[in-house]
Image (cartoon, rainbow over all chains, first blue to last red; front, side):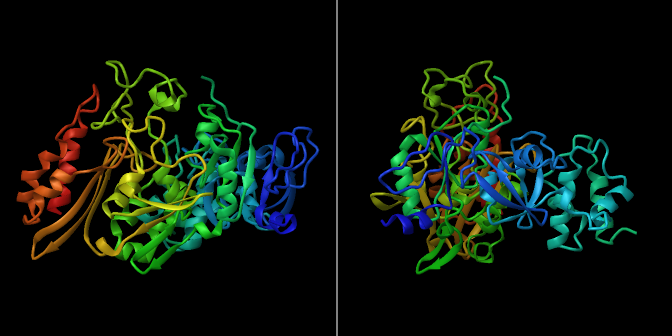
Length: 195
Length: 329
């Protein structure tokens, strides 16, 4: 294998946390990451809410961690951090996913939308956010960003869902207050089906 | 055990070609951890219950994604997401038992990133094991679940061998029912095994749930035309409608001619470590009418050989009833 060809083919990324080394198989290994001196692979640019955000990302860092602690986008909540609650739901290329359970290094070349990216440039809330306010959907509010993201994704693919479809669309988001029916009302209002 | 919220620091490989991935996997062997969607990976790592030196992230390998028609059926790339499997028109039309199973795994968000390869290769559900205790499966010499005080309501009915954990995959029983073939690649080349042989129980290998060995990657699942468009039945029973793992599930396909069952494959999940093919039931219904009467008479056989633990006795009637419904439906 020629190293140039191999490198391009091989490496979307090879990110090492330890010391740099090269091997006979032709990997290019990133510089020492623990020093904090960002290697080319660790210093990546993410597309978050339509903006390019350069950020130094550890190899096994999750997107929720990066959003909250590196980019200060704390609207994305970490509830269980195990993909079991939905509070950290964000849209990755338009698809709802748990930000706690994806690697930030997988976001290269993808677009991420978090709760902060929904409002219009003039500050107008997204119709789902406004509808949730109008329906008093949230109670304590901790799960709300995730509920909003799931609702936005649902309405993007199905602008006029039935109540049952809303229930399914939001089924990956827990609410410990039990405000489910109010969230469903909010989604139906946002879709124009509830006056 | 403290709860850890942060991933441990590991190396990360992101190959974009299968050939490169198998080379990396071969070189790292058991120091490497293959990641597809990662939904069964990150919990282990965050809990510090298992560890590895490096993650081998397969999600950038486009060749491992997608559903293709072949001369004899279809081939599903191992990285195809469960949502893609559930929503594929081709699979819904010909292999509905699989699309239905994939459609009820975990939650929508997990199905959006979780892969078919990962779903069938996931580890067993046993909290003692998943808590990092040194049980048989973790290389120790005792089982915490199979004790009078042990929490074993979700555990296995059959084929226990020191370990009593049950397998959790919903798609695995469907793939066994459809007589699928698993395609495995390593630096030595490609080998294929039947879905039935892909899964291994604790008597054979207590520390693994599949025959995959370090350095090997499950690259695709092939489903033959044999059971395309067959009469099918899928049902999953769990405590919750979302997220939860099956307490018992049943995947079945039938070849029916004039109301008579000519042949069938009936597979139960979550009753042992591997999907359990109910061959005695299959044999008993061959040549019988596919109706409630047949179902009633053969369903008790589904539980033949069950060894009930302290708290999972309810799984016996549950299994029988699901088999009854599968045949009567």
